Length: 345
Ligand SMILES: *Cc1c(COP(=O)(O)O)cnc(C)c1O
Image (cartoon, rainbow, N blue to C red):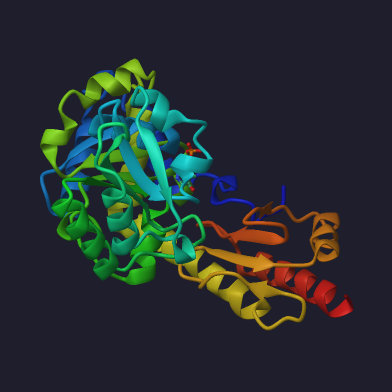
């Protein structure tokens, strides 16, 4: 299939990750369930990357990473504060509630897909009686579901409120790499140095075949997490195939280069289409997506030309997502098709 803008998970495995997948397969027999040398090496590399002694676990996908991380932070009578567009609310089929045995998600509205300290403060203080599930966690998506990013200052301010209100901070980092690339800061500055307790670090959309890392910066919170992973059916017996490809991403900062490339392609697309008639850009272009409102006939015209992309955020809202391998030629071809349809309309 030709390159598409539907999701960054349409892209394949990046060569650096694939190289380690093969190396792990050529090294003979190995210990199972994460006792292997590859998994040990990746955990150490992630500790090096974040410059702290974090606890690391690997699961198959982001839904499991978020659901299990949140279940480790909550009792069944607790609640999780998140944005109304958060993946945990809209796209995980109740996984966080299920794995936490009923913790409720409390959704807040906020501009550009982001929560703010004021929104969180209002949600925490709204009720304090025992008839309402007690807020216990703030979940932030970085980069957000609408392609924006929280700055270091924004995360620090949210974490400060969270700390004052005795909430932990979990980060859905399915596109964490794109946020780091966008802000050009050290990954530790966006996480534990800013007050984040647990990061679900996305690998799939960054170029892995499969898998996400759950990184606990507060090691106490990781107590018994291995049991949750196993019980949820997320413990890979041939763990090396989940972990080794991470070495390819981490070596030479390929994870960052992949994200920088995806972001740059989104910027190129943004530049090509932002001033077209009939088209309205919906959110600031900060990571690897461009969101645009288009009239239905133009959307239909793009589909007729074979382009695939998701429509949500109300009628006419289109999401154009770039990946680690999106080619300039693909962006130009897509932008030209949008342009000719907009100008003919
Ligand atoms: C893709 C994505 C996930 C993970 O989804 P899975 O399909 O379960 O791997 C989590 N959060 C966000 C914001 C995502 O975009």
